[in-house]
Length: 96
Image 1 (cartoon, rainbow, N blue to C red):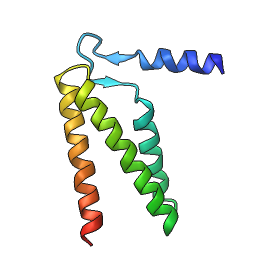
Image 2: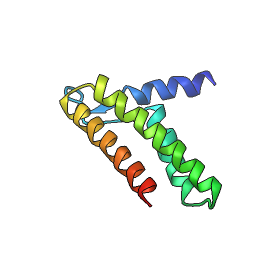
Image 3: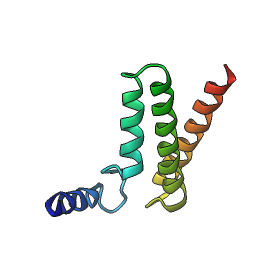
Image 4: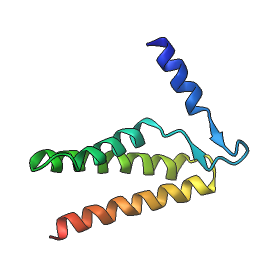
């Protein structure tokens, strides 16, 4: 377990470019959100709805964290766009 955590910390430290990070290794809320939204397409019925809800919650958490504590302006704008996407996706889901 220690080697896994050490590898994860090393990966989290990677960013490109180093001086103004635009691309970074995803943080836990983004990983969970993307996995849940991906699994949603393999599920059906209530499971698909549950995985979709989990995915949107975690993507919303990631977007909020980027918006409020992003490393630079690009990351904050990315968080705002992610949050806008989540609000739009939820509005479309409940409009039907």
